[in-house]
Each structure stands twice: as structure tokens, then as C-alpha cells.
Amino acid sequence: MIYEVVKRYHLDTLSPISLVIIAEMLIFLGHMKAAIVIHATNIIMLVFLAMIRSDRIYPVVMLLSLFRILNVTMPVFFNLTLYSYATIYMPMLFPVFMILREGIFDREEIGMTLRGFWTYLPLAIGSGFALGWGEYYVLKPEVLLPDISIRNILILSAVMILFVGFIEEFMFRSLLQSTMSERFGSVPGLLMASIIFGFMHSGYHIPLELFYVSFAGIVFGVMFVLSKSLPVIAIAHGVTNISLFLVTPLYPQYLPYFVGVPLLIHVVITSLGYRGSLGPSIQA
Image 1 (cartoon, rainbow, N blue to C red):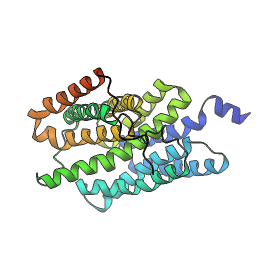
Image 2: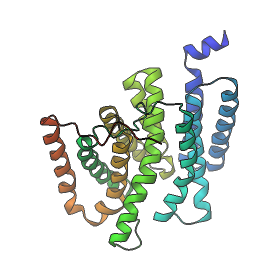
Image 3: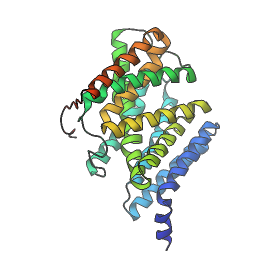
């Protein structure tokens, strides 16, 4: 009877997700210790639930809480710089690898494919520059590079795409959006994943940032549905951060070109019916 009620109202999905949102709201309100306790409790609860029954939502939400704990605690040991981003995100590669290894999600389902890559790459680049341009006026961050050089620009791009973009999009689009869409439908699943994505930016303590990042999550989510490619979305996310932390504060005069030209190329490609591919799938 209890199990039927849980399944009927999706309590097995909504309960751990609710704890994530509550913890993020506590971070937004400045109650960091309480938030970490809730995230840690969520992980422990999900571990015990996973021992009782198998459910794909458990490792997905566990990954969100684990990511937040690492994200919050790692900067205690050093100042947040470009290089520290790699240090924060690198530990997340291990649970990502384990999820891929266990085969919990199908490779096509989570977008581990390069099919249609060239078709959607210009869309990812143009959209990324546009989203970063808008987010700059919400956050007004400092330039992340210690000095402007080709080497540092390449490092920034690699970190934002290969670490930040890949890890976050794997969590929120490949896993969370896929799972939510399976249980609640494509549109509700996309919206729920995007809202949670927005809440996970509570550390800025700016209400408009939560709404803006949720909107960005919708853009990424739609792009994921269209392209079915994690690499495309990781690039879109990474370019957003490159635009936010480098291009917009230093070279705003070039942004109309960085946004307009790739989007125009995408329109031309799609109007010609081209479906570029680099291969059927990515093998891990």
C-alpha cells in the first residue's frame, strides 16, 4: 500500500529533489551549515534507498548533492580562481565515470553521441555568447583571467567547456532532464530540470540570477532535445561562461558578431537540410 502511494505520487522522485531545493534556499538565505547538513542527509538517505530498491533517480540526485558539497567546501582551501574551477569539478569525473560504467543510462539517451554535431555547433556557440552577454548584466563579475594572453584564454576555454560545461550538463541535461522527462513528460521534465538548475546557483544570493539561469537551463534543455548531443550542450554552457567571464567585460563591441554569425550559419545549415556527424556515438 505504501509503495503504491509512493509510486503514484512520485514521492521517490520528489522527496530527494525537494531536499535539494530546500538546501539551496538555505544557501540563498545564508544558512550554509544547515544546507550542507541537508545535502549530506540526502546522500545518506539515497544510499539506503538504493540498497532497498533500484531506481535511476537515486544516483542522479545523489550527484547533485555531492556536487554542491564539493562546490561549497573546496574553496575553503584556496581562493576561487580559474585554476580552482578544474580542482572543484575534477572529483566529479569519478562518479560520472561510475554511472557510465554501470550502464544505468543508455548512451543515446544521455547524449553521448556526436551525431548532428556540426549542425548544432554554431547554434551552441551563438546561444552561449548571447546567454553569457545577458548574465553579465545580472552578476557583473570580474574578469577571471589574471592577465590576457592566448595561453590563458585557451586554458579558460578548456576549463569552462571540458570541466564546467561537461560536468554540469551531464548532471542537469543528460541525467536529470532525461529522468524527469521519463517520469513526468518531456515539457514538465525539461522545466523541472531547468528550475533545479537555477536553484543550484543560489550561492550568488541574487534572485534575478536564479530566474536567469533557469531560463538558460530551458535554452540548454531545448537544445539537448533537438541535438541529442551532450558535447553540443557542454560547448554551449562553456561558451556562456567564456562570454560571461571574458568576452562581455572586455570586448562587448564584438558580441553582436559572436552571436549573430554562428546563428546565421546554423540557419543556413538547417535550411539546406544538412545533418553533420562525427560518428554514431562516443565510447567510454
